[in-house]
Image 1 (cartoon, helix red, strand yellow):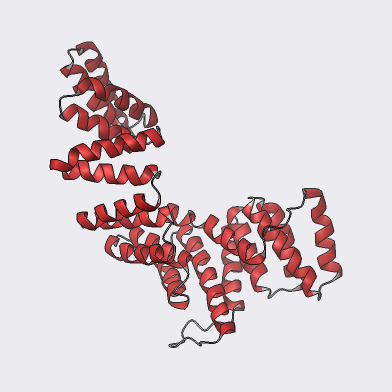
Image 2 (tube, one colour):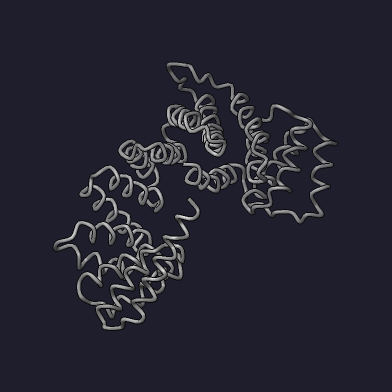
Length: 345
């Protein structure tokens, strides 16, 4: 769950940057002191603080986390309850691996929205709706942080609240899908990813995770449909061709040939996809096309040298081609990998 949720951070950063006008020119490091001095010299000037936040979020998007934090910290020096600076500061600190400090700022950013998380009904005026969105964003970030801290229950609760506060927040639904998937609830994850895909139909990652969640939930037909929908909106998605190909091959029957074609397409788009290489190689061996499998299995072995599967399949392929010495070498590699694993355990 942790690794999955961490991937949300660029989405959070870029979304906030866009809201804040992040297309402004990003300053050089030498200009940061001037911006910070301006903030301290004009602590009540709204235009100065707004400009500083815009620059800080733009720095976040450029992954200049230390520089971004220096500006957010200056804003917080003069305006400790500045919600956007608290949120941006939490993002910067998280990416600087200062996790506890990031959690503290994320909670402060949530509190600064003034949103009552226990309210049964949400107010409908525009100002309150905007506060709900800011609170939802803060909860998504808090969920990321709690997941890193191994508080999976807290992370799941945070992103559930994020969705409840702002049902139109793509990042919240996406985070909820990740959290549910990590908690062993692929059916619930699929529901969240479907909502995310409805909000942002061209997002390939949301559609990919929708398909994989359906597949893990045992809904093969739904997963096939989701993979095909992904490829309709993103025809050059290597992951989409990979997922569709692996599933078709796994289901077997008349879909095997199409599955192999999809795997070949995925490899053409990205030759370093281990799962595509090993699945296509294994399928070719099973179909009596051992000579064609060698290239894919060798690449798979290079991509995952500690995985015995490509070496095992290479041993089968070489044996079927009468290349017994090479088959014996691959078998020895498989045995050595298993022996090393037993030694580690």
